[in-house]
Image (tube, rainbow, N blue to C red; front, side, top):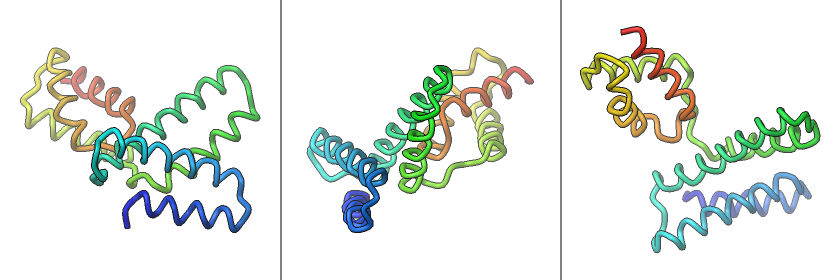
Length: 149
């Protein structure tokens, strides 16, 4: 089942259950997928769907950080609920250990020797973990790994 059909089904379920919070998030996600589809001019591939969901997830994570800095508990709770809904449509996330393992393997494959090779390593790692790991975590792991060489 495509992501769009899954979102449509979940939207109907949320309407029937009168779950306004979930319904609002699913509607936003569906709109984002449809907009990306219109922009692309064709049905989205699974990779493109993951990219859209990753973008939505990242936006909410960044908002959450800002709300925490501002001490807005009401918005923190709302954003946490939104994140839970978005996570249902994301691929399973890799653990920090899994990311470290992938980064270590990639450093060896690329032949990185110092921090100067950071861009080369990031360029090789990101396609491997696309949608499955947060970019900040990957960035931090690559820096740690290269600084320990």
